[in-house]
Amino acid sequence: MSRNLWQAVDDYVAGTIVAADPALEAALAANAAAGLPSIDVSAPQGKLIHLIARMTGAKRALEIGTLGGYSTIWLASALPHDGRLITLERNVRHAEVARKNVARAGLAAKVEVRTGAALDVLPLIEAEGLGPFDFVFIDADKENNAAYVEWGLRLSRPGTAIMVDNVVRDGEVGDKRSADPDVIGVRRMFDMIAREPRLSATAIQTVGSKGWDGFALALVL
Ligand SMILES: C[S@@+](CC[C@H](N)C(=O)[O-])C[C@H]1O[C@@H](n2cnc3c(N)ncnc32)[C@H](O)[C@@H]1O
Image (cartoon, rainbow, N blue to C red):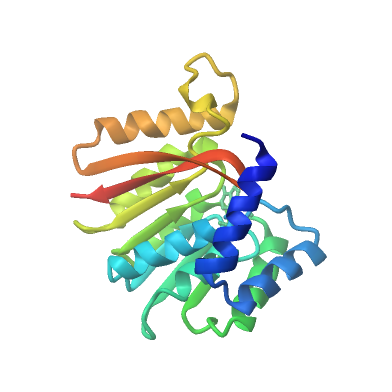
């Protein structure tokens, strides 16, 4: 199976049942115009995040890794009117683009884009008492994934869903000898989750417009 076919199927799914908002298309166009890398979730993945947030009745959400806010818009649009999404982004330029994209989508009142390295900002979020969060989406630097899941757990309640993107990495996650720091970070996260009795988790491999990858999904018990 070729990547072209995976892309064609993603395009078919996106063109039939996903029904992406024009604001989402505008966000991708603004990201490209600003020179941001095209490493946002795909439209079908974005819709999955949106649906899980709705299915779980999430009201407060936390995202680690904003980029231009594409996944942010998918997630924020799943929250109720009085819902709140805090999204963390280290890169100031990415955060600026994201704020504009979120505002264009009419979601500025629900979304706060916080700038800074996530591991510096997360203790502030805890100190400000902004948790517990109902849904946590982790999609930043993979080397810190274990620490992000630990923070997600710390800022959670029983029933919180924690989703982590890019955990398969072209299948390399299965290679214990991999020297790739991202793979090592993902494997460390799997070990951390495996040891953590308060999490019940799985991971699903995916193919699509973003290649061969996958996501992990954990429930806080
Ligand atoms: C894969 S992109 C996020 C894509 C976004 N979730 C989406 O699907 O539209 C990862 C983002 O995480 C940011 N990032 C990387 N390391 C970070 C850190 N330590 N703290 C906060 N953000 C970080 C990067 O600047 C980048 O914008």
